[in-house]
Structures are given as structure tokens and as C-alpha cells.
Image (tube, rainbow, N blue to C red; front, side, top):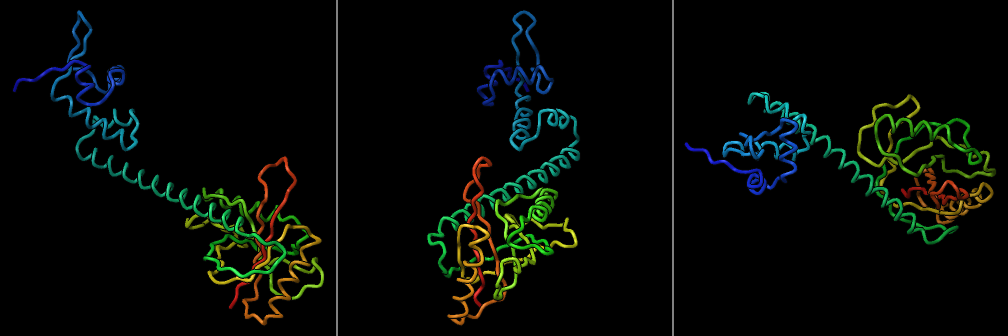
Amino acid sequence: MEENYYSIGEVAKLTNISIQTLRYYDQIDLFKPSYVDAETNYRYYKDSQIYYLDIIKSLKYIGVSLDEIKAAQQFTPDELLAFLQRQEQVIEQRMSRLHEIQQTLYKTKKQMQEQLEIDVLDTVYIKFEETSRILTIQTKGLTVSDIPNVYYSSLIKTLETENSFLSSRYGCIYPYKQYHDVDTLFYSHIFTPLLTDRYITHLTSDMDVQMIPAGRYVCIAFIFTREAYLTQYDKLYNYIESEQLQIMPTVYEIFMPLNYSPNEEDKFIVELKVQLA
């Protein structure tokens, strides 16, 4: 069968690959012309070569580097099949990572929307909550007056070890009961919301993955100060008792930043919520 020959410009049009790219492929010995005219230095390609450009384009499309493509050109069919199977695994890992990023964006947006929907401060309200997955750490002697940096830092390090995403929020858990002094209110756990469904494996003995269950919650939100905390908690407690509400005896406290600049004064909204039974 007689072979047709094409100039570099014709190959560029046939394959939708630029002349500059074809010249570069020649320079790196990835795809060379069948022959080069010694007088004009024009490059010419045979019909049968176009097939190999299709392979190069296909491998580039799935993210294979030019060096890897060059190596793959020497493979047997069995070796190429194994190579493509490995590339499939790489793509699946990328897709999983992108799914996690999508989850993170969704949950972060949802957190911010929920915060913006708090239109009344210092007043008790009832709302429905979806299930929330949290990473918790047990605390000892921690009160509202303390800054939980040591505990929160441990949570962050665990998530970084897992190569997981971090939330800008943290929260605390403590028993529902009447408190007469803010310094007698001791947290049992500090937590941070988990933004993905990733399984957490590197847990220390004082850590756990828990769920804040879905359901209706009686809540109060306020601008955090140590002085205001017990007053706001009492409003929530007195409402529950006066209305004789049946509740689960656990308080979830959520800290939500009102600004994100390190150059501004720290300001947080705190939401306290107790699940209705």
C-alpha cells in the first residue's frame, strides 16, 4: 500500500495539534517526522504515524505527563494495559478528592447560611438541624473562662495528619442542668465539625467521631462575652423548664466567627442548642 506524506502544517490541521507542539514533540523525541528534507528542513509525516498522535492525545487527555507517554511508547500491549489500569486508579483518587472538595464547599456554605439566618440574638428559638458529624476530644477542667487552644490544636493536627479539611468553627459539649456560676460549668468535650465523609483513622485515646443527631433543637444565640454567657444560658434553661419541654440532657455550644481578619478584634457568635426529645 502506498503511503501518503503530509507536511507539518497538514498534520497540524488533521490532528488539531499546533505546529509549535509538533516541533516540540520532535525535539524531545516523542513524535518525530518520517523524514526531513535535507535542503529545506521541512518535516514530513506518513499516514501510519497519525495513529501514534491519537495515542499521545488520549494519554495527555487523562493527565499523563509527556515523560510517561514517552516511556509508554515502549510498552508491550500487556504493559500498556497495566499502565492504563494504574492511570484509572489515579483518576479515581482525583475524583474522590474533588468530591471531598465539593462536600467541603457545600458544608462550609451551609454553615455560613445557618449563621446568617440567625436574625434574633438573646432570644430563645426552635429550629430543625440535620445530622452533623464531629471530631471530639475529651477535656478536663475546661470552663467558659478558658481558651481551648491546646484541645483545638490537637483536633487540627489530627485532621492535618488525615489530609482532611478544617472547619473555621469549633464547639463544646456539656451537661444540661442549672448552673449558678459560670466557673462551675465544665465542658466534657471540645469538637470541630467534619466537612467530609472521610474515615478518620489517627485518633488518640481521648478522641472520637460522634454525631450531633438530626432533630428539633431549642436554641439561643448571642455575642460571646464571659459576663453574658450565664445570663444567656439561664434564658435557655428557664424557657425549657417553664415550657416543660422534653429534652436530651446535653448542651451543644457552637462558636462562629464574625470576622476573619487577624487584624481585627476577635468577635464570635455563640449558639447554645439542646435537642427536643
